[in-house]
Structures are given as structure tokens and as C-alpha cells.
Length: 249
Ligand code: NAD
Image (cartoon, rainbow, N blue to C red):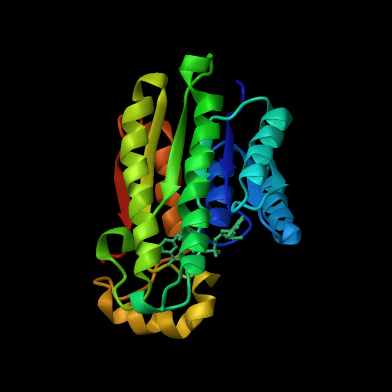
């Protein structure tokens, strides 16, 4: 059987790395995208290959349209097919109120969190759609509970970028459903990764724990398991839907 190929953006650490390792266990051949830390990406690939899977690392700056196109060109040249995409790259800004935000900050967040996902979806659709003679595929976007909760007094700009990702998920799911492509999203709550480092890290995470009904923050692997389910045939009748992984938040 031909092995299906999955591209995960931002897969050298955190939720992306956990997803790469789980997906490989489920039989996906994984393209591990990273930005600057090639050693971390190679470590993820090594963990996968040592466990009997297949993975290769690919670099790209997701704030660059040129880099994104080049990433898809390289992945398609290397594997000859693309069956899955996880749009996982994302950044959070410093904690701040709306009257402290400027265009530079907003452009940075929206370019990395939503423009990159739009561009990746476009390339993935070209590579997966039955309209172009391909076998179909599946896209999972990594959104956030912030998209619905708004992140008041933290970063409403980040929340707004994730809300845009939710709308992309719904619209694209409808657009490509008849072309054999499913599009879904996960909405993590507070997850223990270094995305929180610049805003107080573990201290900030511990502070918000009391606001979570389950009274604990989540792990990257708990998000990865939802993503891998959405990638799998087990979720074959789901498109345009969301899985919240947020401890009830
Ligand atoms: P993380 O910081 O470990 O992962 C983010 C990834 O994006 C990193 O691999 C980073 O290198 C990559 N990245 C950032 N800017 C990039 C750029 N310009 N080009 C290429 N790669 C770039 O944090 P994480 O928590 O694993 O985040 C993964 C996703 O989950 C993000 O989209 C984030 O918004 C979302 N999320 C996280 C949480 C949480 O609490 N950790 C909650 C909700 C949503």
C-alpha cells in the first residue's frame, strides 16, 4: 500500500512535534516543518525513524509567501504526493490591551497565524483535490479556544487571528468537500508548551489553572491525539467541525 504523506507546520516542538510522533505511529509518513531550529526538527525525525516510522525535516519561514511555496514544492518533489496538512504554526504576542497595539504587531500576528494558513491551504488543495486528479486529503487547523473566548486583557489580536482561522476552516470545508478534502480544526485551551515563555511561562500557566474546570493545563500529546483522530478515517464524516481540547474551558 502507498504510504500517505502528512505535512505538519511548526513540528519541531510543542503540539506540532507531539502530532508528528503520534501521526507516524498511525502510519503517516511525516514532513516535519521547522523554522530555525534544525536540530530540534532532526530530533523529532530521529524519534520517528527509531520507532520504525518515516520522517524528514523541511525548513521555511511561514511569514514568507516565497518560503511557503518552496516548502510545498520541496515536499511534493520529495514524496510525490500530499495527503494531509496540519496548519500548526502560530505565535502569541506579549500580553497587552488594544490601546497598546500597533500595525507592526498586528501584521506580524496575522501574517504568521492566518495568512500562512490560507497560503498553505491553497497549496494543499492543489496537491490533494480530485479536481486536479489527486486522491483527496485532509487538513487540520490548529486554532484556539481564544477564538471564542476572546482573550480579554491578554491578547485580543491573537484571539481574532484564531477566529479568522475558524472561519477559514468552515468556508474551505464547504468549498472542497466535493473534491475529496476534509477540513477541520482543533481548539486547544491552555497547553504546556514554550509558546507561553515570553508571557511568564509556567507562572502564567499556573495562574490560569483555577479558571479551567478540570483544574489543570493540558499536554501537547492530548491535543495531538485529537488532531490525529481528525486526520484518520475514523472521522471520515466530519468536515468543517471543531474539537475543543481545553479541559472544559
Ligand atoms: P510552540 O511555540 O512550541 O509552536 C509554535 C510553532 O510555530 C513553533 O514550532 C515555531 O517554530 C513555529 N513558528 C512560529 N513562527 C514561525 C514562522 N514565522 N515560520 C515558521 N515557523 C514558525 O507552541 P505550541 O503551543 O505548540 O503552538 C502550536 C499551535 O497551537 C499554535 O498555532 C498556537 O497558537 C496553538 N495553541 C497553543 C495553545 C497553548 O496553550 N500552547 C493554546 C491554543 C492554541
